[in-house]
Image (tube, rainbow, N blue to C red):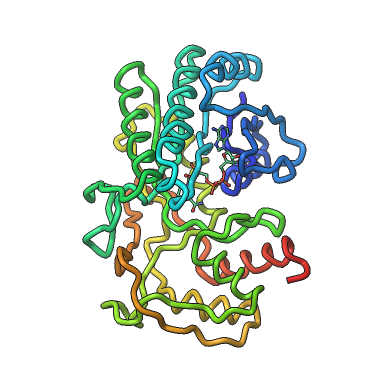
Length: 325
Ligand SMILES: NC(=O)c1ccc[n+]([C@@H]2O[C@H](COP(=O)([O-])OP(=O)(O)OC[C@H]3O[C@@H](n4cnc5c(N)ncnc54)[C@H](O)[C@@H]3O)[C@@H](O)[C@H]2O)c1
């Protein structure tokens, strides 16, 4: 029995594939390599396919049958907020058509278990410090909207034909499970700090007067290895007869301030620098931290890696990918 991991050659996907294979399972990767790299999943069976094009339903159905796939972890998507604002229709086509085609192929082949990659972006700017799954959903960009519409599509398939599915809303994913599996995209605080370090730039902290313990914004950083573990816990959950919830936050439940992340990263990487405090950026909420009670109580999943593990692994991976930096 094989697990299909779409987007398996990407940052999170490669960690999921590794975990499945380390546990003795079979993982099949489908990826269009728009951002993924085959080198991230050595030895895995890979099928190159853009899931957003119509003929992928037929092609994926063949693949699902040929490999005796029983469950799908659907990570394949475009994920850049800035790009999604410039190219909203492209994001809807890639993320929503891609998911719809996966669901059509699953229904056609009676594959009835799905873990869907959602995002904390579905919450927009939450009004409360700790965000439960029942918080209002108000994505603020086309990327987040594709994740919310994706959750609806998954829920509708559950109602329509008996799909068993969960949507996982990841918070700030960072770190690396091994040096060669670092996050290649410079888009989140950790990779932006690492790039700034390489370029000899003083780190900038936007906003020093938020109502937080040191005045900078608070975010929930979760180790990519823990995120990968949440997918395996979800597959176990989907085999239970009773499944009370279909949406789960994936975070640590503990917030770190931007200043703490900056100083901790400076410490683990031997970077002797003090951050510059700059004016706030419009639209940045003061604090966004996941409530993780639901996933802990239902799946017995908890993040095992704290901020120092996240940052030291990210630094090691950055050095691996930028040996001359
Ligand atoms: N990294 C984060 O912090 C984060 C946070 C929340 C949610 N997510 C979600 O997690 C998932 C994985 O993110 P990631 O960080 O690993 O990103 P990534 O860009 O590294 O991985 C995405 C993978 O999907 C592939 N892909 C994209 N579109 C495809 C298509 N149409 N057909 C086939 N393959 C396609 C890419 O080539 C890549 O290998 C995405 O759905 C993303 O939206 C990520």
